[in-house]
Length: 287
View (spheres, helix red, strand yellow):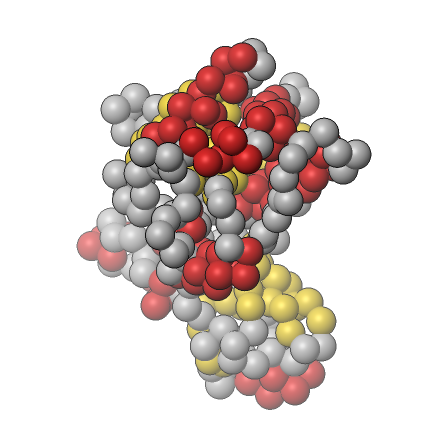
């Protein structure tokens, strides 16, 4: 929230890559000092738009959040809204009718946190030679800032970014634009705008997936990046790779992914943790 109008409407700025076309008329929750305040993203009604305006995408600067307040005083004093309050999507978790896919908000990148939690659970009784850190970074969408600070604290020998991938399996998206498909396996990134992964670590991921009979796909992104873009630049360099769950409709109120792809991502990362002994890690940078 950046400001509250005299009439009690909230103006806002996005945190990260929100596309205007998916925002209008969506329910949100404003996180205030007095508790959660529900609202809806509004704009000028189409009935009042000229023909030229109707054909244009409404810009974020022209949107507002309606929380039902009568005026600025009610919004601020009674409901507790003030500039700087965070606004989050109001989107419930739900399985699809076939039970194979799941819908929910912010899979980018809550799903990465879920993966490392399940990997930690799988490894809690030992069976691996490593000290493993699972890090939920902040501000990835606005500059990989949490990755920059956390990599200093952890000082890793190897880095894995656990992410979502953009699949090319919906109408209007060509195979040349996005390679992976939901339900066809996890994805291993070839390249994005922030990093070319360590080739030896990349090959280890592929070899492990094949050995464990874990379905996987390749992925490449001309735009966008992940926390690995900062991790791999730490000190003299950290071998890093991105392993992802293909996810439809990211950067919107509701995304969709396959539970089987998720389970396979957990299996691969767990298997890699068991394989990465001191000799294997040293070989990643022994030229």
